[in-house]
Image 1 (tube, rainbow, N blue to C red):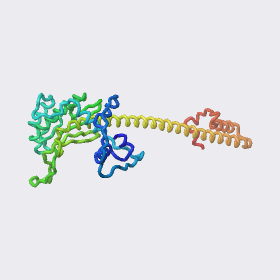
Image 2: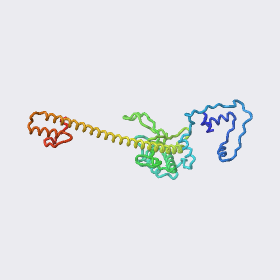
Image 3: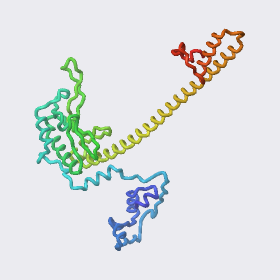
Image 4: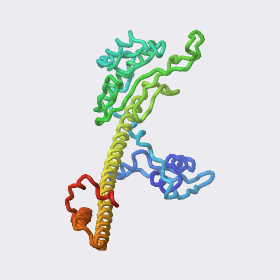
Length: 335
């Protein structure tokens, strides 16, 4: 059926329903596995009579229209669900993790001044903010989550800047919250609104990648641990790919920046050398002009002649004669 779904514009489930509707027998679950293993299976017999339409028309699937695949997340959820992990959140804490014990003590005495009615944990503890009525539920969920995370070979850390699930050295920040609702207040002169807890609990992935889980109509938050674990592991995989791509991009950018910097430096050197060449050519030309002028002067004074030739030789970039009076003078000043 999968092969047919890939060739025609119908899903394997849709083709199965079509066979049932047309009274066409199809292999039982496990038959193909038996056949591949070399076992014989009983072939169903086609019915002799069938009422209604006896055929179906199927369109070939265009090459660009692929069969909808089960997502990587769904496959991972199924895989994790089949493992023997402590997914069941108990009705009461049993052998709680030390992080849970410390959080329980803080939640019994600390409140959040920014969120009236909320109990909070301290720095370096589990990141929980809920009303007193939901403390037990929050602790039981987090205790089970921590145990499942560790059973999967990962690490749960409570640090001063938040909580992290560490998967393959990648840190994913998480927290547990009770949602709040914006409510208008009339008895506070300098405040028109405040955020009040509404009883709805949510566990959040709060890193670059974000996700959250809460009670659904048909499923409590406590029953979604396989989904939570699968999402965290997939997020770590995606974050690893993102960081790898970012590293490759950074390396390429560094290479391009270095190549551009080298090119710019070479261009500056080339331009500087050319400017120097032009300056020397002008100096040489001017020295030649001085010599031509000196040669045309009639009956020059010998001292003046020696002085003039010295200046021409000083200006000439090929000779560059020393001149005590011109030591601090730039030859380009005469161009």
